[in-house]
Image 1: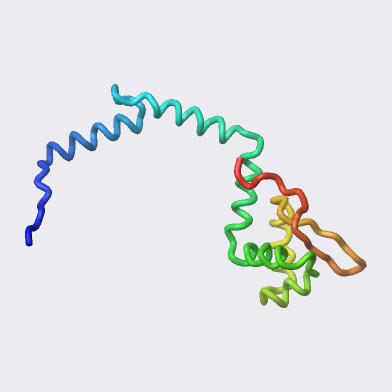
Image 2: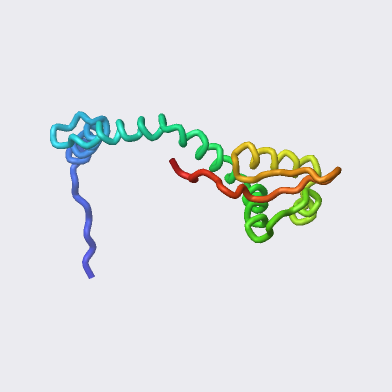
Length: 129
């Protein structure tokens, strides 16, 4: 059995690190792609779809909200009280979470008397810009 040992000197590690840092900053003579990636990132961030996608992803980042979306995917429509029973959340917390999901364009709400019903948005925009 043989054991391989990396015998790079400290100067070799520092040279490699320096080269990589130059590449990441777009300053390496051998790399011209980083400025292109920076331009792509700027275009994506400037896209009108980016803020909406970010809001959707933030809304789905909460475990309870993701659970509600998964429940709504399986049911056509749920009353706030059904969501409350399924998730174990208080009425006020369900109302808050549903407001976040509605603001993000993931669900639609309708009132029927004193009851509030929720369903997935029929035509949600693309999730990613």
